[in-house]
Amino acid sequence: MRPLRVCVGLAALAAALAFADVALAASAEKGKAAFVKNGCWQCHGFQGQGGVAGPKIAPDPIPSEAFMAFVRTTNRQMPPFSEAVLPNDDLADIYAYLQSIPKPADPKSIPLLNQ
Image (tube, rainbow, N blue to C red; front, top):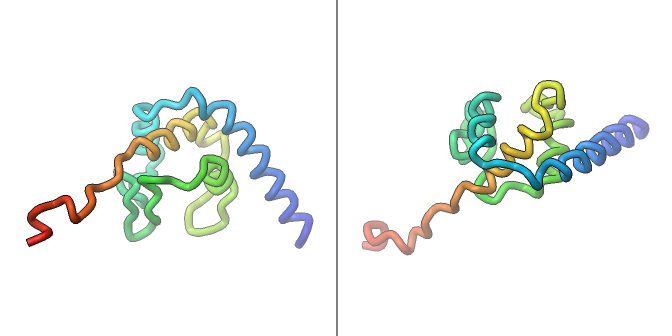
């Protein structure tokens, strides 16, 4: 069992290093299109707010390295997305899109909710 964990860990590290190179040139606009094209919205909602099948992933997504590693190597309900299916550039763009989603207003700042 231990060799499998090492392989998964090394794969995650390699994916994170590859992701770091493309993350600098990421585009939130392209990321929104890739988020829709790859069906991420079906489980996570159009704004990453989460839904019945997928957790909330925005605003404030997990760190980029953890995000990349999870998407590439997950063994949970979400299927892993290989680089052949979801290129690193597209994944970096999706991450940029998730980062660009603004936080919701503080409920205390909404007058109707404070009556």
